[in-house]
Length: 373
Image 1 (cartoon, rainbow, N blue to C red):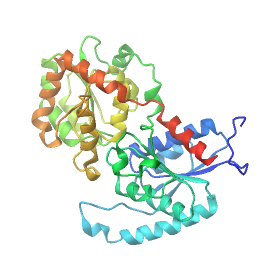
Image 2 (image 1 turned 135 degrees about the vertical axis):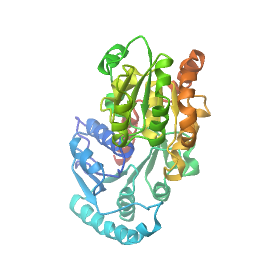
Image 3 (image 1 turned 45 degrees about the vertical axis):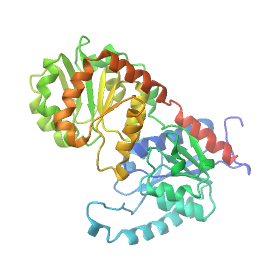
Image 4 (image 1 turned 90 degrees about the vertical axis):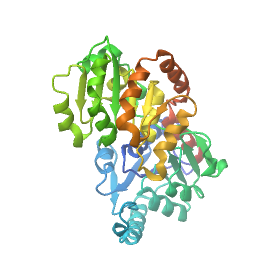
C-alpha cells in the first residue's frame, strides 16, 4: 500500500492504546505502537493511562500523546482505601466516553494495568475491535473478563487456554525494548563502562526500578563473599537502598552500585550470572540475552504471578529460583555455588536460549493490521 496502511474505507487507522502502571506494561505498549507505525506510517495513536502513574511521563518521552484517567486499582492491603473505587470506576467510564467521541478509534489495544479495563470494556460495548496483550503466565482478572469479547489475545507463552478462548489466542512473546534486542555491546566494553575487570566473573543484581528489599539485604549481608570468591557485582539497588549500599561498598573495587541502570544492554553484556525479580518483562529480556539466572519472585504481585513466571522456566531447567523469604540466607551462597559450576551454567543457557522471542512487537503489529484490513 505504498507504505501507507488504510482500512477498507481508505482512511488512516486510529488506535487507542490503554494501560500502564509499570514499565512491564508501558514499554511493550510503546513497542507495539512503534511496530504498527513502521508498517503503517499513517496510523494515529492516542495512549490512555492513569493520572499520576509512570506512563504519563514515559509515553510522551517516546513521542506519543497520552490522556490520563482518574482511576485507581483495588488495594489488597487496605480495604478501607477501596471505598471510593466504584465511584472512580464509574467516573472513568464517563472520561473514556468523552475520549472516544473526540478521537473516534478504529481499534483499541490493551496491555494490562487497571486503566486498560474501562477503555477496552467501553470499546467492546461499541463493537470496536479490541486487542489484548497478556505479558504474564498467569492472566490478570481484568484481562480474563475482557478476553471473552476481545478480537484477538496475544500471549507471552503457550498454555493460556485456561484463561482465554483458545480460538482467539496468538502466541507472540513479549515485546522487548529495542536497545536489548538489537544491541552490539561487547563484554569488554560493558565491563569498562562499569569500571570492572575483564578477568573476573560478574554477577548482575536487578530488583526492578524501585529495588527489592530482601535481595538488597541479602547482598548487603554477604557482600564480602563476592570478593572472597573472585566475583564482581553490578548492583541496582533502587532509590530507597542506595545510600546504605554506597556506604557498604566504599573501597570495594569489585562492586558497582547505583539506584538505577539506564543502559541495561551494558549490564546484560557484562553479566555472567543474573539475580532478578521475575516480572514478565524481566523474564523476556533474560531469555533473549541467554544468561544463567536466579529468580527471586516478588511475593506480593497480583495472583503471585512472578512465582508462576519463574516456575515456568525452572520446570524446563532454564532458571533457578529462591523464595523471597529465603533470600537472606540462601541467595548469595547459591549464586557463588552456581558461579563455580560451569556445567550447570551451560545447561541453564542451553535451555533458556530457545525461549527468547525477538520480534514479538512485529508479530503483534502484523496480526492486528491483517485483522483490521
